[in-house]
Length: 403
Ligand SMILES: [Mn+2]
Image (cartoon, rainbow, N blue to C red; front, side):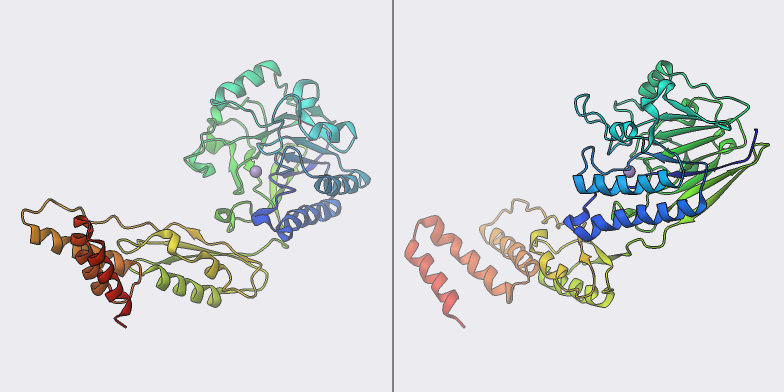
């Protein structure tokens, strides 16, 4: 290579995402990008690669667009070119709408790789090939179609980078199993660095480890803010790639500090009635409460027989915090299946079984004196079946007036 090269790899910025309907969360995504831009202006790399999902929506609000333009203008003034591909969130939803990245390209604020001839951009020391998010059920098939239509032409005398927004399946990349991605072998060969977006967990893997030729890496830079509470633990930031003239690659992680804190914790409510479970969770929220944090209690376990999930008072749990920005309970507990009733032989037996069954249901609902209520329910059956309304009313009134 003619000269050493430094470039930044960033992705999944999700501008315009108003998580939980909170203006503060929308600002968080803006703040994370602003912090990244601050750092990038200081670092002044040769170029910046945005590997998809700059925006959370294909048609961002005017406010979000204004913010993005402001930041892209700052980079332009600093003389740092921005190259981008679209992601699953900001790619063209249809051919009429098109992608938001095209007008930004036309305005000279970024280079939208897929809009450029050959889906690439070339400098004196680098060749960058970009593939945005590809719609279609078989990602390998749509990728191979794309590569056939726009054949990549990596230049061995330059540093060759492929920017993409898709999941690559390999255990070293830790891509969740439910995400069907392409095999590393489906990627076009000849690149020194494969810069990925779409997977929000940062990951840096040697090409050799993926069975690909070359000394470089395949990397996901991860997201810049927490798009889903499951990603709360992942480091937020981007990569800075240093390449020497003999193509020796060193990758540096640049972390973002101003990211919103999430406190995610699990609480098992097995055996508790819904009111008791609500109480326990409210207590836990008060104990975990933290200024400006997002609290995510994950409620697990099995409710007692007869109790239903809708009886867990999520509003009471949410309002137990006084310092946190928000409390967002995740209800993963399940309702108990009631024991199956087998046909008894005697009439007396069915009454006993029904009684025991009802006691369990009322206990689960946190009813006081469940035995008394179950007994009354059983006694009601006979007059109801006989159409004896008077007798049924008398029983009900007796129940209401007893205390
Ligand atoms: Mn994303």
